[in-house]
Structures are given as C-alpha cells and as structure tokens.
Image 1: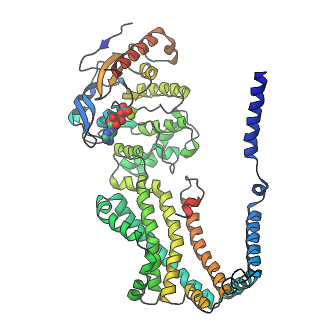
Image 2: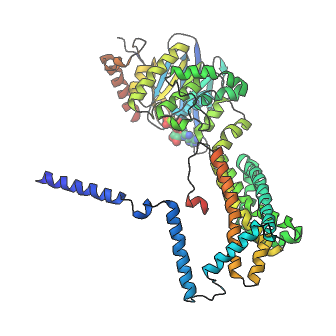
Image 3: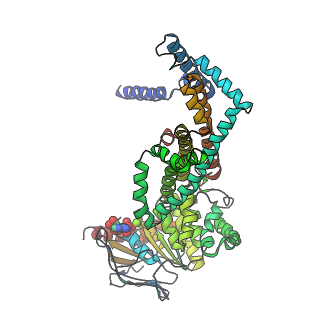
Length: 270
Length: 289
Ligand SMILES: Nc1ncnc2c1ncn2[C@@H]1O[C@H](COP(=O)(O)OP(=O)(O)O)[C@@H](O)[C@H]1O
Ligand SMILES: [Mg+2]
C-alpha cells in the first residue's frame, strides 16, 4: 500500500523500454497567441498505461495532437520508438470523444477504413475477417453490416475502438474517448479497454475528465494545470492488475481519488 | 387542500398540453384530398373574380377557358404535333445546359473549395458574377451564339452554374474537424481525403445545388427563347401572349413547369438513391434558396 507522489520534473513510467519520450515540449498557438503548453516532459514505457487529467482548456488535446504528429511543438522534441515524430505515424492509434464513423460505410467497412487508406481496397477486403473478429470482441457480433445511424452512442464508440485497433498500433492515444457515454457504458468500456491493452501489450495514453476512470485504468496519473498547460504532479497507482470494477469500492481506490482531487483543486488555483 | 389544488393545476396543465397536440380535421384528411380542396378553393375564387369582372377578361381568362386550353395543348403534345417538337427543343436546351452547369460547376466548386488558389483568386470573381442579374446576359449570348439552340443552352448553363458551385464548395467544407483529424492520423493523402471524406460528406450540399440548378436551367432556357427566338416552348408562349391568348399562355406555362419539375424529380430520386444515409425531407427553405 505504498503511495508515491513523484513531483520530479521528469516523471518516469514503470520499468521497461521507453516508447514515447517528450522533452521540454512547449506550444504557443501563434494565431491567437495562446500559450497552450509549457515544458512538458514525459516518458512512456512499453505496455504502461498513463492518464492525464485536467480542467478543460488546459492543453490536453494539444499535447495529444503533438504526440500524434498532427501539430508540431514550438519547442522541444517528441520521440517515438527512438525516432522523432514529424508527421502522422502508422504505429499510433488515436481515438476522440466523438466516434466519427462515416454514415455511408457499414460498421465493418468503418473498421477497415485505415487499411483501405494505407494499403488499398483489396487489402481492406482481406481484413474484413479480422474486423469481424474485433467487432465480436467488443460485443458487436451481428452488427457488422449495420450502418452507423442505427448504432447507439456506446456501440458507435466500440466500432471506433475496433477501427483504431485494426492496424495493430503499438501506442494508443485516447482523447476523452468515453466521456460522451453514460456512466454504466463507460465502466464497461473501461474494462474492455484494459483487456484490449493487456492482450496487445499496448502502450496507452489517456486524456480524461474522470478521476475514477483515470485511477482504475492507469499505472500513472498526471495532473495538468492550466495556462500554460504544465504537468503539476504525477501519481503512481499501485493497485493490482487486472483491475476490476469492485476495486472502486475499496479504500485504497478512494484514497487515490481523493489525492488526485486535491492536486487538481490546488492546480486550478495556482 | 393545497396538495389537491396543485394536483388540479397539474391536471389542467396536462390538459392544455393535450389540447395543443390535438390533430385538426384538416390534418386527418389524406394529403391528396386536401391538395385537391385547395385547388378547388383557388379555382372558385378565380371563377368568382372572373364573373365579377374584377380584372379585364383579357388579362384574367375564365378558369374553364384555361382548363380547355390545357386539354388542347395536352392533346397537341400527345399527338406529337408541333408543340411536342417545341417542348423537346426546350427540354434539350434545359438538359444540355443543366449538364454543362453540373460538370463545370463541380470543377469550379472543387477549385474554390479545395485549393487555396481558387479560394483566394477565383472566388471573388465568382461572387461578383453571381451578384449580377444573370438573365440580363441573354442578349449577349444571342449575339455571340446566334438564334439557334446554342445561345439558350449557354444561358441555361450560365444561370444554373452558380448553385452547383456553391453546393460543391460548401460540401467540401462540410466535413468536421474530427473527421479530418482522423484522416490525417491515418495518413490519408489529399486525394483520399477528398474522395473518401470530403466529397461523400458534402453530397447533401451538392444535391441541394443540383436541385436549384434544375429549376434555374428552365428559367435560363425560356428567357433565352424569349429574347432569342428559336423553336422552343418559350417562343410558343411569346406568340400566344402577342395574340393576347391568355388561356393558352397559362396552359403552356403549366406544361413548361412540368419540365422543371421532371428534372427536379430525377435529381431528387438520384439523391435519395445515392445518399441513403441522409434522411431528409425537402424543406421550404431549400426550395426557395
Ligand atoms: N487551433 C488553435 N488555435 C488557437 N488556440 C487554440 C487552438 N486549439 C486550442 N487552442 C487553445 O489552446 C488551449 C488548450 O486547448 P486544448 O488543448 O484543446 O485543451 P483541452 O483539450 O485540455 O480542453 C485552449 O485555451 C484553446 O483555446
Ligand atoms: Mg480536449
């Protein structure tokens, strides 16, 4: 029952090969002169799960976009598997708050979209079988040929997960992926996500608004403070794996939630 | 006591809600019946106005004379007489003009919507031309292209062009930020983003443009015929009007509008077929855009 609170400038994940390394990443949006991020240092190790939590507008999405290569940092460097990130990369899977499915494609066609874009129609057709297996895995058996407007929000988000996973990315970057869902679906999806991450030994970086979600899933939880976005503190979550929803009722869990809540409250008034 | 009172109030509130949702007898009639009733009322008012001589009979003929003419013109069309030839001429002008507008409008829309050059350099000119009364160009087209079918085709295409450009360009901008971001993270090329994201997303906008263009192409062709002669339906209308045969003019206009309605209908059918995911009804807004 150790509760470490690493406030060092370079939080380090669990032991293991570093996958993502950010050094001194700052970002200023030139057009509106918004100083969004200030000297972010991060090191994600293979197979670890890292969550970032912070009030809205504190630069979480900006950080994620820099990590995917959608945005370039104003300062600092981003390395993925030892190579600098300069543009979108194949080995990254990304997911947003909205499922962003395309209504003219069936569920399975939505899932194979990344394959179709990267390797063409024929390769995508060959992947239909894998896509169906993935849909089955997230409990969407029988919905393969259904169009998105017939899916509920939770189902659509599960299709989006499959689309992210079809390319077998080594790193998952998730921007508030379940915050549009009701709490019950969210808990269910969190457990699904944990299972998938473990199965694939994926390295995961999750942005969330929910403290319980961050605690139940993560090895490390960072708290961001706003204007400019900075990592104010990082908490190591020392709960046994696999995590279960029952753990949410344990005092250890409650203690982590309280600790992070306090850090957040402090960060907000810094 | 107070409890009971609030209870009663709630009931009253419920009742008013129900009353508001009551369906009037007009809404319960089949649509065809109500439409026919509206027509009947319209014709009666017309007949009364005719009998009271509110307006000179030359300007406003009797509804019966008009209906008679509709039948006469209809028979002429059915027997494949000269009127059918005239209608075919106009139909050709409309269809060719419409197709030119669709192809040209699509490419100009792409240029304006997808490229920086188009947006900065071409767009201002298009906006300026669009602000002009386009049918006023008719005499120019006639003097450039002569009294044949070409000048009418050109005017129809010219008038119908702009809604297609606007629809295409608006469609290209319709894809939301998340979808674009997703395509970028997947590593889609510009061409892939255009064909697999922007164009399918923009289809409803594109079709709104097409529907407006279908109606405007008829306007262009007929104005062209009014000013440039020829052998089309517009010419027949002009002749009938010059002979003060008002019932004939009305009848011809009705058949002419079937042409616009037909093109509109084909586009609508195609839209329902192609954009199966976009459930929409035609809004009045869209019709009068
Ligand atoms: N494209 C942009 N141009 C200018 N400012 C931006 C842009 N995107 C985000 N910002 C600003 O940067 C700050 C951080 O935004 P964001 O990373 O989206 O925050 P979060 O995801 O934590 O809610 C906000 O103040 C926001 O207004
Ligand atoms: Mg955000």
